[in-house]
Every structure is written in C-alpha cells, then in structure tokens.
Length: 313
Image (tube, rainbow, N blue to C red; front, side, top):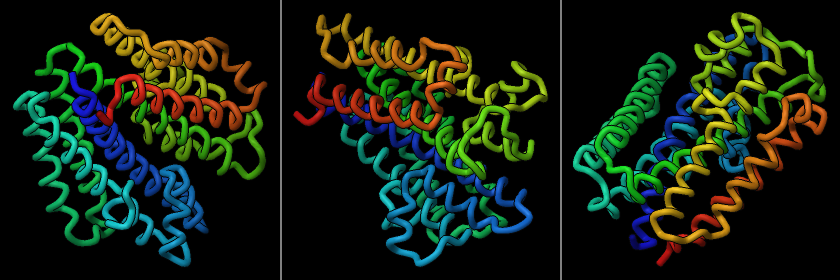
C-alpha cells in the first residue's frame, strides 16, 4: 500500500476520534460548569486547556467566556482543532483514499461532514448544544460501526485502528492530567475529594461512567478513577487498552509486510514503561509527571509510525 494511502487512513481516523472526544469534553465542561456555585469561567478555561487550544483562544479573545469557548471549540474556522475543522479534515482525507474504503465507510464519513457543516452554520446556543453534541457522537458511532462492520481485516484496517488509538490515548491522558492536577485547589494528593458530580463528569468525558460503576460501585476516589482510566484492560478508552491495540495492529502490519520498523519496538517499550506497573507506583512517581512523559512518548511513537510507513510518499 502506498504511504499516502496509509497516511490518509491514519489521519482520517485520528480526526474522527478527535471530533468525538471534543464533543464529550464540551459536554463535560457544560455539566461541570453547572455544578459550580461561582466562577464557572474557570471550568471553561480548563476545557480549553484540556483540548490544547487555550493559547490560540486567548490570542483571539481577551477573556474566557462560556459562549466564546463553546464556539471556538465547536465551529470556529480559526481553530484547526475545532470539531467542524477536524471533521472536514477527516472527510478530505477519506476522499483522498476513497478506493481504500468500503462504500459504507465513505458514505458515513461524507454524511457526517454534511450534517455537521449544516448544523454549525451559525453559533450554537445553550439550548441547542446538547442536541448538537449528541449528533456528533451519533455520527462518530455511525462511522465506527461501518468501519468495524464492513472493512477487511487487512493493512488498511490496521492503519485506521492505529490512528484511532493514538488519538484516544492522547485524549484520555490529557483529561487525566488537567482534571487531576491543574484543577485541584492544591497539588495532587491521594485521598483528595471533589464533588461526586464532578468526578462523574470526568468519567463521562471518556464514556466511562457506567463501566466504572460496574467495576467499583458508587464509591469514587482519585486512585480508583486513575486506576480505571490508566490500567483497566477492559475499559476501551483506558491507556492500557489503547496501547495494547497499538501493539496488536503494529504486529499485524509486521506480519503483512515482513517488516519491523522502530515503531513496533517503540509501542512495546511504551507499554512496558508505563502500563506494566501498579497504580501505587504511578502515584509515587507523580501522576502529572507520569502523564506528561507518557504523552511525549506517545507523540514520538506517532511520528515514528509516519516515518516507518512513509506517509508522505
């Protein structure tokens, strides 16, 4: 397969995953802002920081407000990471590699862009925001279903999955770092407590509320939540789950091509360094430092994958 095709599949899936993650993050910001009795603007600042767009936002706006934050993250053309922008980029990549996609997958991606483009012609008001975010999640699920249900399990499928899990791991790591470190009133300490509604919102932001309750019941604690989102092997958005899937799909490519580039070894090293240890060891090292190191190494792995498979040929 040509490197350009591999790259198109990789980035198509990354952008689609980013759109869904961003929609979940917006929903979480809305919920958590409503739980604050005062100064809910701080919550929108944390949402912008989690999404990695705070500096760019402040370059355009003098202060953080709810309405401007939602518009910036959802549809602003000046923000290349807005939901609308990344869905357009996903569709553009899908069009470039259309012959590598099934009819169902292409139709799902194209329909997603058309619906989101139509729904974001104007600013989305507070009343309509929940419906808008639900539409984004539904369309993401439609593309995911078409991909899982119709694509051959070959190298083309592997590149879509690698893109998905690189982006998903990055998102989960960012949420853990910002929510557990930046937002706490003092530096992170095991045993700290926040309002249960806010902890539930953190879990909701990665679609993990129901799974957490099945595993841990109604009790919420920083250590249990961190363990669930980092080390739980069954949780499809945990760092452990994402890194295992990266290992698997890179090993399939190795088998298909008879080629083992540095990225395959790097994925194994990423797992062994960060996920083959108990949660107590992570806390002892420092959760913020752990997540920052993980995100840096994940970014390096992503770049190495692009080099190994010559995405830009």
